[in-house]
Image 1 (cartoon, helix red, strand yellow):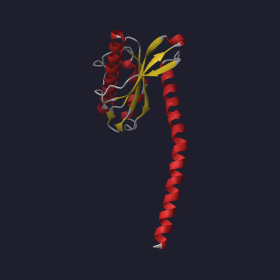
Image 2 (cartoon, rainbow, N blue to C red):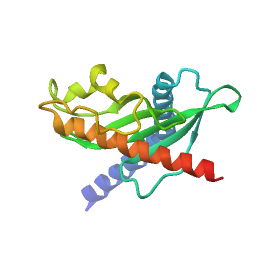
Image 3 (spheres, rainbow, N blue to C red):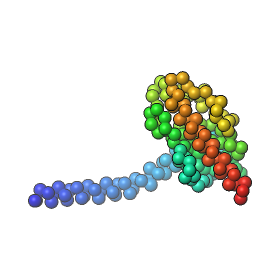
Image 4 (tube, rainbow, N blue to C red):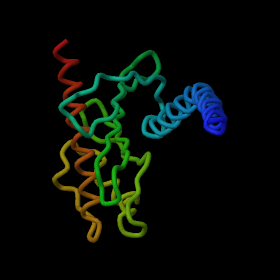
Length: 174
């Protein structure tokens, strides 16, 4: 009985310490994630001054986050969207930048776990450059041997484009 009380007390103290550490570090981790996203978006929009989060679309299962990008004086520059398509190696986080006509400015990866050497070809500039300037992606060539990975990128880009078109329609209706 005494041993159980001692072990229970130790577990209680350790649980309380873990909760305290989590409450201190959680905001720091969240700030670092936001800073990483802003850095990535700044690569897509070098002149960006502000990123305003947009409402989620519950019908778009791949959409994680969307932002209206503004330049100096609040001038609209485009949209930055994060989508989470599922590739061969699991879920990937894909950032897609769009201009005000819903055409792709660039694509980058926040995370992915595709097969090294084959699936990771989706990260190559030659593949990602196929998307630049497009608002529809039926002309994008899949990578031979990495069709699941490249199809996931195309699906993610399509989901992001649909979200941007919805936001643009909402703005023009307002």
